[in-house]
Image 1 (cartoon, rainbow, N blue to C red):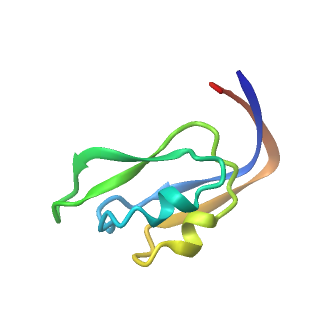
Image 2: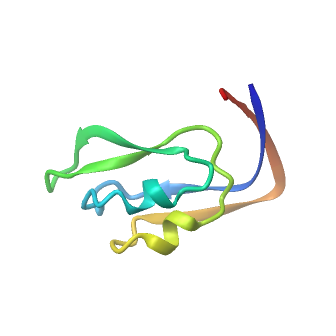
Length: 82
């Protein structure tokens, strides 16, 4: 197990996603993976796995504005599989 200190997390608007996967490659903690379900437009969208640090890299690369970043008042410590 690895301990991650998180300053925040993200919310993904899966219906706005067009499946470009830019967020997945931009994610430093590698907690975004492409999901198998399709949205109403027929695109796969990313899934958020435990360990998000709230860095906002996904927000900055997303051409469809699918991400909202939320900051915690106090950092949260999470244990994730290595």
